[in-house]
Amino acid sequence: MYACKKLDKKRLKKKGGEKMALLEKEILEKVNSRFIVTLSYAYQSKAALCLVMSLMNGGDLKYHIYNVGERGLEMDRVIFYSAQITCGMLHLHSIQIVYRDMKPENVLLDDDGHCRLSDLGLAVEVKEGKSINQRVSESSPCRAAWLVGRACSISNALSPPFNSFGICSSLNILCGHFILSDRWKEDLLY
Image (cartoon, rainbow, N blue to C red; front, side, top):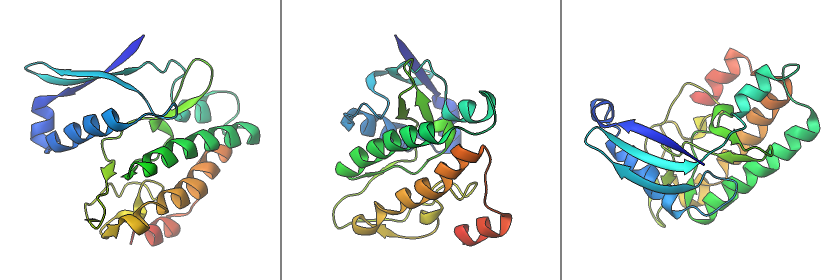
């Protein structure tokens, strides 16, 4: 079974997202990891670009954190998910890709409870000797705040996502809420 991510061409053009959508497709074609969603094929119609991927019936991690049992998850599940997320990120880094949209709703679970990273629209391939200076979302300090407004080379672009994932996401998963104060958010963003 498959899921189809349908990207409306008019909406993409209006928001300037055509390049991001094509980049996501190209990155998904390069990925070969059981910890990242699998692109089976892609096609386009007059109105949409469609990415056909592995179906993840288990919902997203955000749903499990906030809606299953008590808020947050037990430590053994946090460790299990964190290990799988780390494996996905390591695979991306091994092919020079930086994942820049780490949040619970972008971690999807399959029928067996294993997780995969999804939504690689903000991911970027880092070419050797080049730098990243694209702006990313400033809405969450756990989402690539380390990159906002800065230029990064491959040597330093690949480790900060682990810091933001390790600290922010693991505590968020465990506690069931974002634990940093507004002051911390400001410090991380600027």
